[in-house]
Every structure is written in structure tokens, then in C-alpha cells.
Length: 118
Image (tube, rainbow, N blue to C red; front, top):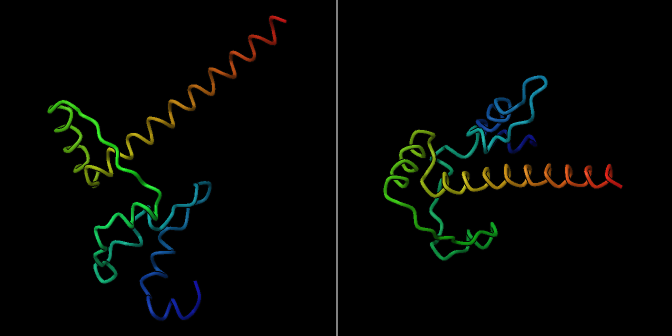
């Protein structure tokens, strides 16, 4: 962070310090930790023209779930402090990561079995 940025936005200096990892921990992004980006002074509305989705490479995905699951998802999203769409997106990403890791382990195990049998 350069000196002029510190002068213009002194709160960023403390936010950066708050986002520093503890010894042995992985670095925490100040945006992810909430140290940055939650101050109303820097918030502004963006046009609802899909420009944000396009810039971030996002597409809309729709699915149908039963009412009970929707209620549980919404309640849990609220409890963890996320919007419903953000929570569902996070849940999908985490589920896919776990499945990809599991599939990778299965493929490695299968390759190991083939090598032993030859």
C-alpha cells in the first residue's frame, strides 16, 4: 500500500494489518475476512445490466428444490451472514471441490491397482 493511499484511506492500513495471517496460517484476503469492503462510505449501486456478471464470468443457473430445503438454505444463509444466492453458490463450489478431490483419489487408486496387477 503506497503512502498516498494510506493518507486517503487510513482505515485500509488497519484493515490490512487485521488481515495478516497468524504464524503457520494461510494468508486471509482482506475482502474475504470483511476487513475491506463493508464500509458504507465506499458502497455504490451498480447498473442491473449484467455487466457485473459478465466482468466476473458468472452465469445464472436455476434449479428446483422442495420448499423445506429452500427454507433450510435461507435460514442457514442468514445465520452465516450470506445472501441466499451467495450461500447456494458457496455450497455448490464446496460440494464440487469435495467431489473432484474424491474422484481424483479414486483415479489414483485405480492406476495403482493396474500397476500392481501387471
